[in-house]
Image (tube, rainbow, N blue to C red; front, side, top):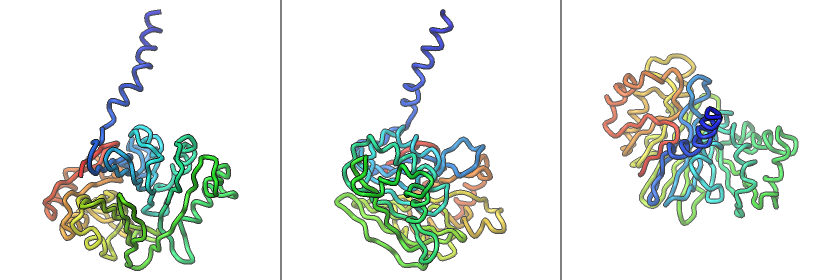
Length: 304
C-alpha cells in the first residue's frame, strides 16, 4: 500500500516539476525562446531547431517547426491565437516535420484570424506551397487537415501560405503590422531552397540566418546592427567536403557576426559532432568575434 501511494505521489508531482523547470520569458520587452536546439540526430536528446519571438508576454512569431516543436510550444505556455506569423528557413523535414501536429493541435486554440505562413520557393522547383500540399492537402499525407487551408476551417481560422523567392540576393519585405515587420533574403544551403529572416520590433532586431554556407555573402549586410544573430552550429572548423556547401564553420560564423556588428551570437541546431567540443568552437569564434556568445539549449529564453 505504501509503495503504491509513493508511486502515485511521484507521478502526480512530475507535471508540476516539469512546469517549474521551463524557463520563463519576461512580461515586458522582446524575448527569444529556443524551443529546440538540435538537428536531426537520434542521440542528442534535443528537439529540432525551432524558435519563438515574444513581445510583452505574448508569442508573436514562430521560426521553423522542427521535431518536438508542438510539445515545446505547449510547455512554453504560448497561445496559438497570439501568433502573427510562422516562417520557415528552408524546405526540409527538419524544419517542417511538426507543422501538421501543431496545426492539428490548434483546433481548440480559439484562433479567429488568418495565419500567414511564409517560406522559400524556387520558380519551377520546390516551394513551401507544394510541400504543405503534400503534407496536408486533400491528396496529401494528412488529408483531414486540408480544411485548414480553406475558408472557413473547422478551427475557425485558415492558413495563408505565402512564398518568398529563394534565389538571387534580393531582399523581400512585404509583411508588417503594428508590432513587427518581417524581411528575408535567400541564403545558400546546398541544393535546398533556404532563407534568412529578420524581424524588427521597434528598435529591436533579430536575424534568423539558420543553416547557410555564406557563399553568397548576404548575411553580414542583412543582419547589420541586429541585437541577435541566430545561426546553426552544425559543423566544426575541421569540416571538409559537401558539408561546407550547406553550413558555415565557427570561424565563418564569427566573421559574419563581426561584420554585421551584432550584439549577440546564438548558436542553435547543435548537431552531435559539435556537442561536447564547445570549447574548441568557442576558441575559433572568439578569435574573430568579441560579443556575447550563446550555445543554445532547449527552452532557453533570452531578453533583448
